[in-house]
Image (cartoon, rainbow, N blue to C red; front, top):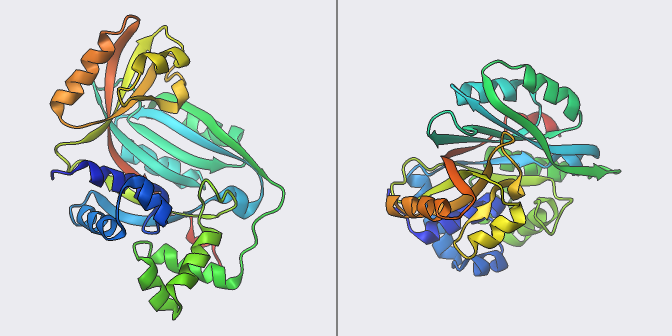
Length: 303
């Protein structure tokens, strides 16, 4: 499949707002509402967006102290390793599968999860066999003294969305015999956004980039003596950024990410980085799949 830059913009917007972008979101993305729907429908038909899934933002929903954490690892069977982790970690939300060149350098598996007992869960993760170059670390910490209270109607609404995460506002309104304005008000209250940090719902797409032949998101693992703030200056306006804010991967590499259009541009990016004094590109990671894990959500919303 050949995609256009606006398709990637639509995917990135879908990752944060699903099928419910606000007029402001669409304006910032440079997309009209009908165009956004059309592009999402085309991406679903092509298998790039495989499905939409509802997950819960656990810290405000349950209250208390929480860690949002990540696992990075190299595995010979990344999907199998992910299943082992999901079976024991109660709140895994995302699984990322990468391909690396050369093989065996850098993480081909990443997971994001919420934890209220980070030390215990870290020990479990480290006890698993088959994971190499393993790192487990905190991304962010949360503290909510009081949990968000949900009404029976809100729980029913969330359960419906859980089972029908790919529906738009009009279809949801029709199911409940309500107006689109009623649906939008519910979403405004429940949907987690940067401006609504007490929201408890996210709807995200499971993405498979492998059908796309002219685009990829890549991480360049570089060995460098430059500090992150120096790297930012050296990268300039090249459309590249630091992964994890410049946090070292395996105590050795810094990740630099970029959207790449075509093989020629990929090689151009490698050559650009290798020409910078004090940087050596050790490996390239290709973001192949992003899988949204909702297996645990149903038990959390009992009406």
